[in-house]
Length: 115
Length: 110
Image (cartoon, rainbow over all chains, first blue to last red; front, side, top):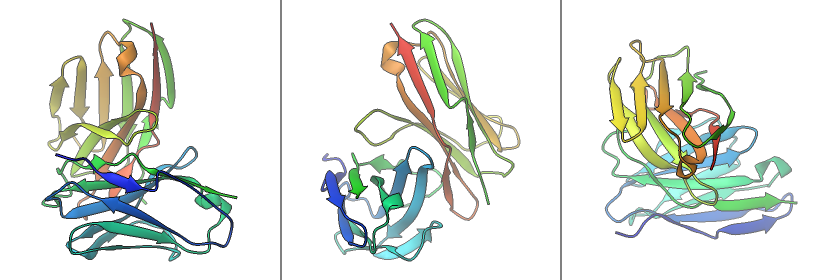
């Protein structure tokens, strides 16, 4: 079974620009979650999508948004980039049956650098 | 705001030593998971604990969920260089909110 894939793996943007990151979950998985990982803040939950609907949301500003398509692929968008948005963005897929106990399978991440 | 505090943040030990990593909160979690992340990769699930007082063993790794489901520990016996990595605990609240601890960076020297 193919794992979670994220594209692109590396991205460099400048302040004020916007960026779109893509995630393809494991086949059959209906839940896709996004996380931001930084050395200072650790791994922080952005949002979770299940069957094209946002099911859970973390405490991030509205500049961070996402969506999920009918084939479960997901994208996240960050508008008006700030220097502090530089981070590793991780996508995780799971069957979506139980948030408590589902195994989340993480992709390798997209390393975003904002200059 | 629910928080998960992990300690220690960094640990550098010699091969063969034992170690324990702690994950503590003032809030109750319905479940807790431990992950290990290696450089350039995403975290990989090690274990899920859901019952207060639960103990799970995975080869040389022992995981425990506190009786009150507010804390957890990961104990590694006879650490090996292959255990090197970032260890993360993740709690799931009753409302489905997911919270990660800050992580413990473990380095095991041969």
